[in-house]
Image: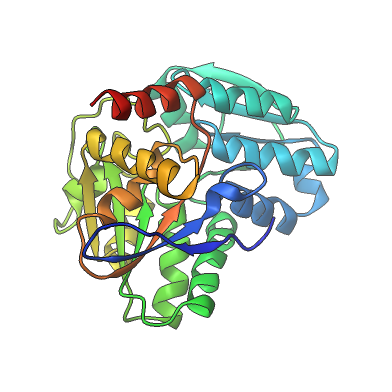
Length: 295
């Protein structure tokens, strides 16, 4: 794992955009930070029998990467719509995948249990050691850039935002934290500003690593204290951000990884976009680029 690059994006827009390229981590995602933080801080008595998590793909890869280093088995409970690119990466890292319906996957994440699975459960969202690993991104930003107005973060379960925002609010309280979700499943955007989380309609989409059906209650409480604004992004704008990253920077980003840039293109301040991951199915990526050529 390494400090990810921070680069300026050359784009015709009223804002000044910087990209924090977490997509260039060894597994193509920031999730290696949280997985390493959680498992390495645990004692051997916790992980000796193996580790497991619930994930659509990126946290799974992080957990499998660390498990491979430790020489212990890793199992992943994944939703049955998980992208093939991520499932193949899990297998390449030696992990076992259990595919389940979305509702079962969500219940497993909330309960932290699944029939027949023992060993250390790494919660992809609620584990504070995971959030601490993610918070290092906020520390790196505070050390590298002055006069940041806004940091834009994709919101999936909330662990990335909570980590980054906790660090920034401690070191740079003037910096605004804005989240980005796909419009097809944006519970935080619907709920922020209300006293209680709001019910939403959810549709699974190719933006699989962000957005969801509902908010995890504990993360809702954190978000109310840490997030200044939440934005729901139409899928067409996410596609345009994917294309822009590919054509202007040569960076491959999955849907969640491009969400922050899609929001930045609407703004007029100095902002940093967390490009969270690169694990997109090749045919989906090709279709997005082809639509640009045909339009």
